[in-house]
Structure formats: structure tokens, C-alpha cells
Image 1: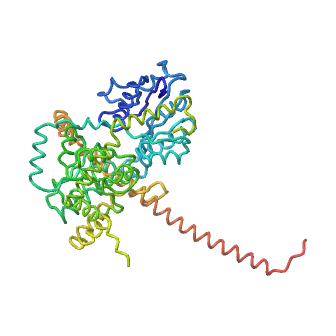
Image 2: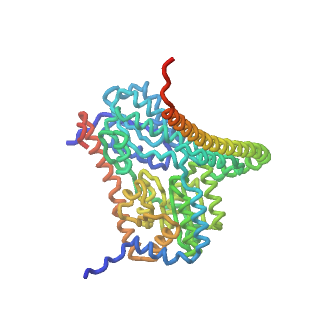
Image 3: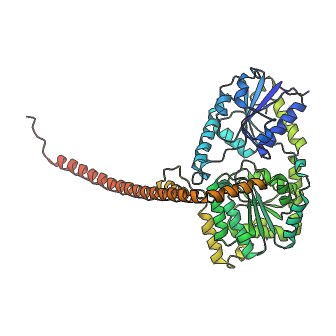
Length: 372
Length: 148
């Protein structure tokens, strides 16, 4: 019989819709509640669309919740006063680490964000003696926790409901993208915040090489919220400098159904990030049978796990050649699609939910230091 | 004799890339140079020039405010506000850009002067060291003086 704690509360600095961590937190709460565990979400910044799902975290102190019987889970990914708040609480504490981007990526584009990332790492380190268990989305993230001195760690994949992606995008959106497809040319796609660690500049560079050498009608779409405005401007400058004109589309604000439409009409997903804690869009691409070409860095090899083409070199010509190979070698594309579907199945909600409950049950009765 | 190992997918990709290396060498070099300029730069290791380059990156104030929005009416509203305030933002932005550029020029001079000082201090330190060694050698040559 699985023994579960009475109450588990989750804390996260920023709770926004259609965000990997926000979705994960909602799914974790659902799984816990379905299993009879009381669970609430507490956040520092709550998007108005999620106002009914979470409460401001300072209210936790006066809520009468916790005091001994609760386990608090802190979703660490950025600097927040919440870390110190939780560190001073008497309840048992678990950190779910979603990775903090190294400050060096932001130093030149967004110095304030870079300082914030340095602070976030310090906060994560300061929590070490208080944390009973450090959870991580990937082996890569887990290794960072171990390096910081976390004694007990485990990999807990993000809870993703891939059924959310099986919606029908607006007919007019599909018609517009369908017309563009009929115009010819391979459709490249990358999804991820417009941030220097995601290296969209390298994707644009590789795409420019591909257009010049293999397919002058090719098209690239970059989707993601803006983290560094200056970096976005630099990307737009790069598109102009390489004379790519309208062949590159940057969509900083993309509704979810449009995102689905873009996946459905993409030919290849190209990820040249130098730092990723997991990279959910890789699995999203696999869900839509879009072949993945990615640079081997950080957690990307863990996420791809043989279901995509991993490159050790991201020279524009090498990436362009890899994309050409994937798009012209039909047996390879079918093989990648099959492997991708299997990879998505490994991260299916029932599988990851089961794993979460096993992890949580290990926390009952103190769990023993090395049970997980 | 052992059979040759078939090339891996990555080796085949590298070979395909190599076969196209001469197709557009000038353009490929332009791509490499342009993307290289946007790569991460380490400013944490006390590199004053890199820190100054960051100031320079931020010295140019962009008054072309983004107006994209998920909601079309909001995007329209932002566009209207942008048009109405363009003269004001342009005037302000120009002055802030000038201030930024002046700070960069001043910072560049300071870093350059500091480097020159570091270099001359290093030379002076070496001269003093050589003099100290010379005095020591001379003292060894002198006969011991009787105590007064």
C-alpha cells in the first residue's frame, strides 16, 4: 500500500498560463488531490488568468496551514524572496529544481536579469541544509543540485498533458499556413523564450546557410516570449544583415492554438541552445512527428535521448546539412518520428504521475535519507 | 583484413557539409562573423573591455517601441500611443543615447589609462627590484664597519 503525506503545498515565483512550470504545478496538484492529498499553490506573481488557482505566498504564514504536517515544495528557477521565506519555515521542505540559466548568457543583454540569476543560484545553495529532497526535471539539473551539496536527490520529469496539444487550431490559421506551405520551401521551427542561452542567433545563421545552399524558399519561425529586448533587436538586425527578409518570422506573442498550428505545419525543429534545463518544446515537436535537429548541450541530450539528430558542432553549414539530410532521407525521418513518439510516451502523464506518487510516498515517515 | 566501419550519421552530415564548403564561402563567413558577434560574452571575470562593450550595447536607446499583442485591439492601441508620443520619445531617446555614448567614451579612456598605469607600475616595480638587488650586491662588497 502506498502511504502518502497529508498535505503538500507548492510554491513558485511566477505562475503564468501556457508555461512549462505553471502547467507542471497544476498537474502535480491534480495528481496529489486525486490521491487524497490536500494541496494548494502559492506564488509571488500570479497571472490574472490563474488568479483562482493560486494564492499570494505571504498569506501562507497566516493561513494556519502547515505547522508540522505539511510538506512544502519550492519550484526553483529564478530569484525570489520566497526562497528565504521557505527556508525560515518549520515545515519539511522539498526543492523541485527547473534550472537557473547561468548569468553569463545575460550579462551583456540584460545585466539586471544576470544579477538576478546569480542571486537565484545563491538562494538555491543557501537552502541546501534545509532541504529534505531535491527533485530535478533532468539528470543535468540533478547533477547541479548534487554539486551544490544536496544530499538526497531524484529526477522527477515534468508532468505534461500532451492531450492539451490535440486541439483543432482556427481554420483560418491552418488555411493561411497551408497556403504558405504550398508555396514550397522547408518550414523550420524553434520554440523557446527569445533569450541568449537559447541561441536563436545561431538558428538564424544556420537557416541562412540552408537557404543559400539547399533551399532558397525555406522559411523559419521563432516562437517565444521576450526575455531580453536588446537580444530581440539584435536578432532582427541579424535577419536584415543576412538579407533574409520575410523568410524569418519572429512571434513573441503567440496564442496556444497558433503554436499548435505552427507545430502541425513545421518540417523540422531546430534547437541550438547552449543551456536548457529540460526543453519541453523538443517533446512537443516529437508529439507532432516533427523531426528534431539539436545541438548537444546541457540537458538537451537527456531530453532528445536518441530520438533526434544531435550535433556536436553548430557551425551553420553543419546544421544546414543535418537539416537537409533529415528532410531528404525518408527512412531516417520515419525512424525519428517513431523514436519521437516512443520518447513522448515515456513522458506521458500516466507514467510521470505514477513516478511522482512513488517519489511522494518515499517522503512519508521521514523517508530515510537514501530511499529515492 | 577487417571490413571498414560504415560512417555514422554525424560523419555523413559532416562530410556533406564539407562538400558544400566552397558553395558560398563569402556568405558563410559573413554568417559566422555576424552570429559570432551575438555569442555570450563573459563579463564576470573582471574583463573591463567586455563590461564596457555591454554598456555600449545598452547605450543606444531604441524608441521603436514594440506594439505586438495577442489581442488585436491592444496592439492597435499601443500603435496609437506610439504614434502620439513618437516626437517626445525621439527627443528623449536622442539625449539618453548621447549620454550613453559619452559614458562609453569616458569609460574607454578610463580603462585605457588604467591599463597604461598598470603597465608603467609593472615596469617601475621591475626597476625597483633591480635596484634593490644591486644595493644588496654592493653591501656585500663593502667591508664590515666597526660599531661606533
